[in-house]
Image 1 (cartoon, rainbow, N blue to C red):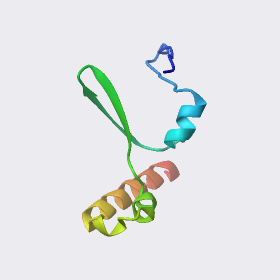
Image 2 (tube, one colour):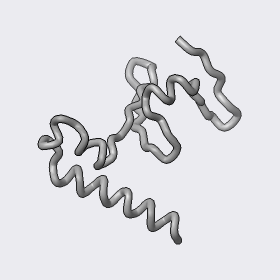
Image 3 (tube, rainbow, N blue to C red):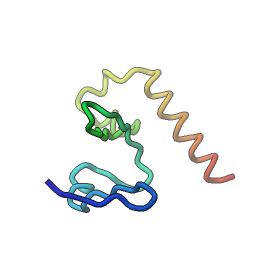
Image 4 (tube, rainbow, N blue to C red):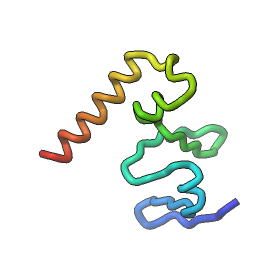
Length: 80
């Protein structure tokens, strides 16, 4: 189990091997929760990730629309 230091601004940088294994890349969104005094990080799948899954049929239209809106809003904010 790797041990990392917390930076001055509260940054926590996992080792590169762990980031690669989990698919952590710049711009990717994660969900953070606290359970029993432990921080849990969960990748939020992109619409493409959802479609690549074997169970792509279980993706609701609302989930796809929400992801699409978030991506469009990010793009609009970056180009402004």
